Image 1 (spheres, rainbow over the protein chains, first blue to last red):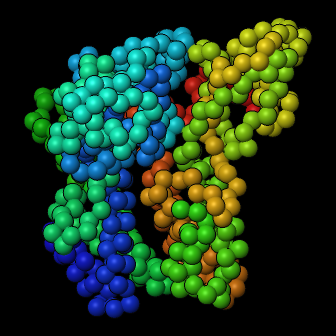
Image 2: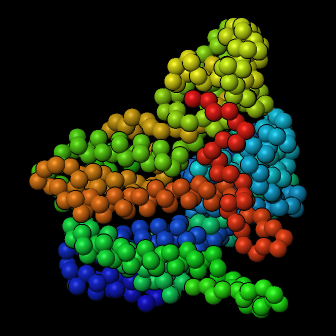
Image 3: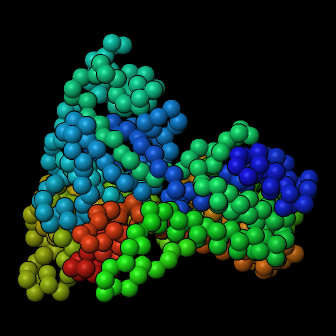
Length: 264
Length: 230
């Protein structure tokens, strides 16, 4: 199977043509399983642009009011694992530090201003930067006019973001500071019949098994649900391994060392 | 989404929209328990709030949803948690000695009370900050459940697990276990997300795979040299 329509058809087949569940229920179950799979396997990677706010160290990546947008035409999807962070103003990659390292290496780091060159993960989804910027990057002059003050998505999306490129408008002033973050993410919900999941084709059956497990559970068929759940879990573990090991290690033996073991 | 909407959704999923087997009040209790359980296990709610200085006041009540302290800072400087015994030996008058609160203590003054060591001599705002993991709040019909939307599904599984496990005509222990397993998956997923968020992906010479056990610690734990303050 390959597209959303095929997934729905496969779920229906496994439910033995049961009409109890509507198309919406089946679609919701597939998408819920899809999101869970992508979050656990980290198989979907995306790039987003974060506008930096003056005098602000932490940005909550789960908060819809955070000024972060996808670097493409698709909507921003919450960043799960940060892969790398680029500062286009300084043309440098940001390195990661834990907060304890920051406290040991840089006293009073939270009160330092400048262009960010380190990022600090805090808690569940708080993305910290060091140093924080001082000047107000929201005072920008573009061909469309001037905007300033607290980030307002409705205003700044039009002024700052070039929707096609996902980057600040070329007309913005040099004081605009932003970061480009590469991260794993959760993809968009599948709605159209032709939508194709980002999960590799070899693992599409997992999406239907997980959906059927959920629907069978809701039908109070515990044994059937557990059976599909077990199959789903096994395939999910394979996908997680696949995502970690898809760049195969060379099997060239080294004299005196044992051969690289086969991977699943 | 608030508890009313979630309860309605769960009752519908369990086929008991008319509340024959489980009442809405039961589900509200399960939702509250589930929220606290999820937050406690995953530490998914991190907050940074000021604990403003009041002149000549040493002890401060922590927020109601405070669960575990991550870090404290004063005027940009990290505050050090201190041991009461060391304080008693070093400065017998530590409870009243005025100064800037570069240290703090959370022992002996109440479970949810923080004592600033270096009692503030003047009022100040936004100078003393605490960063902590929160559990709560107590939900009402209007409060949005403070979890990312995609984790509300697992909260629903927790509620169903509790409902099917409770005594009564609706009891089904196999289903209760099924939904408990699925809820557990959600908890593990959230925990894995936080560990992945904090992991530094720096490869080391001679190794082509990142070994998480050698990376920076998860932000959910204090460094080893932090004295345990309870």
